[in-house]
Every structure is written in structure tokens, then in C-alpha cells.
Image (cartoon, rainbow, N blue to C red):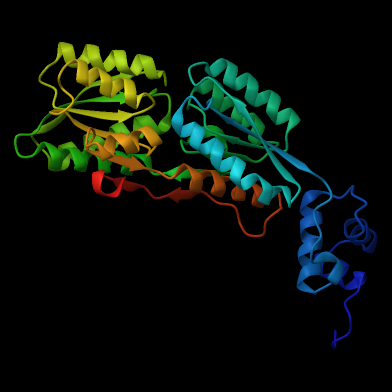
Length: 338
């Protein structure tokens, strides 16, 4: 363009839209599809058209986030992360609304998924991999972008998954137990929230793999499901270790760290039981520092939530770049780095 000032016509040619459509977007009159709006703004900024540089998309898009209530500490951390990041996305006219679900009621989760898909522009979900839920997500994903977060629903038709490779996380846990138990080995119990959660099933599978491959003396005994109920977690640990005093370890993969450790203390087993947990919540950090538990495998919920929000922003054309599944890393925390 020979150094001349760019015009709306130049933007229309680059974005492959009409001059009238460019005019509607850059003058804030609305009524333009989000993908076209994003294309026009990208073209205008590339051409250094001044009025586009600080332009905020006109149409506000709304995203429903389905996850457990904050009484589950991991989900509380996800909510804190969402609240911290929300103002950044508000600048893109993109808002996120949390709706709490009961992970033990797949029928209600499916109903909620269908209703939110009708009312919102996208869905970010932390839900069990149950047939009714997967079916509702497939229907939603045919009309709206869906991102699974922290635990996947592979058959849901989702556009992307953001979270850890849980089989690898389970393998990490298996390696930790194998080393902590030492040459004599021993059996451990696993406390999961629900095997309906893909992440919990994958962690169990990964742990079994490592035991079979590398630690012949170690074995996985009872696998307990608490339904994400902290008090139930404590009762299950007490009953299981009372009935089977030969257990040498506890793999804790759900809510209820405090009640579980209280149960071991009541049995006098809190100092001779190897305990590996997931998620570095405030209470687990204290337990680590007190050396009441041996290790925590943390998947960084703040990073996961922010990346899921960015992924949704890309799917809704509010951020540039391709939206894709992102496998996040995990970190091991012990007493010395808690």
C-alpha cells in the first residue's frame, strides 16, 4: 500500500468480507458472527488501523463451567483460579459462569449439560465419564465448543482436553511407593473419589503397571470409592486398615485428607503407613511439613483452569491461535519443598 494510511476497504480485502461488515465491527454496531469479527479485528490490527488496536469485541459470549462445589479442595482451587483470570477474559467480552454438579448423579449432570448448552456459547466441564454424561456432551459439542478439564471424557466429542496424563501420574505414584516401601515391599490401599472419573481409573492403571514392571514385592490391595465425600473417606480408611492390618500404604486420590489421616492416627498407623496423595491443598501442605504424609503429586489447578479458559477463548475466536488438547505436567512435593 506504499506507506499510505490503511482504509476499511483494505481490511475488507484482507479479511475476505464486505466493507459493510468491517464498518459494523469497527464502529461497534454488532450483529457480526464471532469468527468474522475476530478475522476483521486481526486484519485491522495487522494493517495497524488505529481504531482497531484497542477494540473490544462487541458481542459478549458466555461460557458455563461445570464442576464440583468448593467443599472439594481441588475444585475450590479451580474456582480461585477462574476468579483470578476472569478480568483478563472480560476484556475480550468473554465471561465464565460456574455451575456446581454432584459427581455421583450422572443423570442430573446430563440434564445440566443439555440446559447449559442451550443457554451458553461454550462449556468447560469437570465431570465423570458416565454414558449419560458423554451422550449429553456429544449433543452439546455438535453445537458448542466443549473443553474437558482435569479429567477427560474421551468419547464426548469435546474440542480439547486440558489436564494431566493421569496414567503417567499413577505411574509416578507407583514409583514413589516402590521406593518408600523398600525391598520388603507390601500391599497398599487406594482411596479414589469414583472410578467413573477417567482420571481415577487411569491413576489406578498406571500404579498397577509400575508395580508389575518394577516392584515385584509391592501390590495394590483394596480400591475404595468415597464418592468425593470427605467424611466417608475417613470411615473407609478406618474400616479398611482395621480389617487388614498388613496394609503398608495408602494412595489417596480424592477429597478428605484430614479425615483419612485422623483415621490412621486412631489406629496408631499414622507413622508406619506410607501415604502418597494428590493435589497440594493447604491442609496437605501442612501434613507434608509435619511429615505425616510422604509425598503429594500436584497437577497445578491454577494453570489448568487458565489454559482451559484460553483454549475456550480460541475456540470462540477471542484469542488467536489454534485450540488443542494440552497435557499439563505434574510436580512431586515432599516435606522439604512443601
